[in-house]
Length: 617
Image 1 (spheres, rainbow, N blue to C red):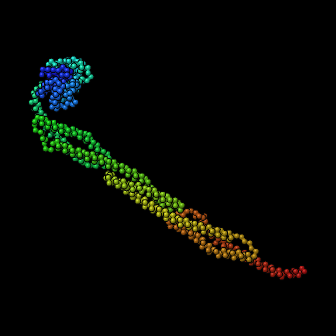
Image 2: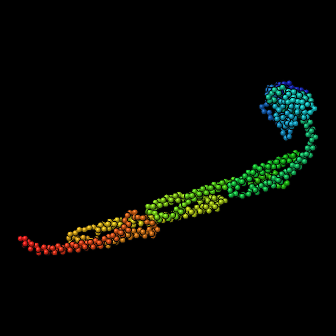
């Protein structure tokens, strides 16, 4: 219905019309006439024959004319139109409407459908309850149609009396007024629009385009009337834009020149909090200070392009900014700013990573140093300890084994000391701010380590030397024990023999005891030398102990026979020998006296015996 009404609104100008859009265009005659009316151009002469080929040729002439206007006809052929294909015929009419009624619409640099929609929005903007966003549901209540009419011909519509809840009345009012006073035929049905969830967009566009063309003449007249005033306003606006550009460009370039040195500065900090503060300052710059400048730059470019466009449209020469304030100059400065910003951010992150690594290394150094210092605590005093001078051989040997275990532990800690030194070296290479204290602590650890090594070596030598000394003394003690025991036994036997009671009856017996005693006395010299040798062994052990500052055990571990015991018993032997001499001499004298008496008795008996015998006989 809409397309038919639209076609008739133009065909009536040629004194004809159509009744059925599917049938009346089949021969191509009215189609060619329609194109001539809406374009104002003459088409090739049509063929008047009734045959199918004549109809096809006429339709092709119409389609060729449409194509010559830059319209692409997709899937629309003359045969479909001649055959009365309703879909193809309606598609062709819609293409014609788009090209000749809608395409040439231009509003604020938008055209065709978008231009028509923008025109409707501009015209209906002041009206309440009207919000044109499309060509379907925005028109259902009829207020938009009435607003368009009222905007251009306010005397024709009492807009304030219209109600949004009475769309049929609104639509019919607009259609009737448009047909009666504006010569716009009724192309839509109010009932269809209201009862359809989404009115036909093409039908609405076709009808609304008639309003645009009806009012465009008045609009052009109004535009012409305002053009002179607008030219003056545009010139003033252009001058203001030039001044704004120069001012904004100067301010922006000055800010860039102030900011780049700050971004290019490389002032490394010593601590992570200080470096994090610099990073936070940079983030604040990006978050707070830079965004307004980005907006200024964009606004500057927009103003410049707008100004150049306005100048070009008004036929004036292009704007040439002052030297050094061209858009390209600002772009180059901004590029330098971005590069400096990127370099600053990379430097900040690199420095922060370096400080984090330094902090980690420093903490690692402190932990390892503390562990090492805790381990070495008391070690120097223990290694310098010389209380082992009072130790026995077994204790010294135990100390040696303990010292060997310590040496193994010391060797195991060598790796930790090397790690501490390596970490300190890396902290120096990475320019750690507290390197002096790290170096001092590391040097102290290394010096102490060297001292511990020297003390460990000295203590081993001292213990080994003491072991050898105690082994020598121990061998002397053993030798002493081996010789003192039999000598002690000999002295005890000698004392027993020297104190032994003897009973003799003859000179021979006492003479035998005296001979044995003399033999014993002859061994006393060797015995005395043996005693002196034994005591010499003890003395040598004592001398070695005193020489090396060693403390001998309270007693010989191998014997209970002391030098005092030997000397005491030897002295007793010495005392018993003369007593034995005296006793033997007295006994010898007694036996000699007895022998004299026996001999005297025998001599007398020999004399008396015969006398007695004689007497007895």
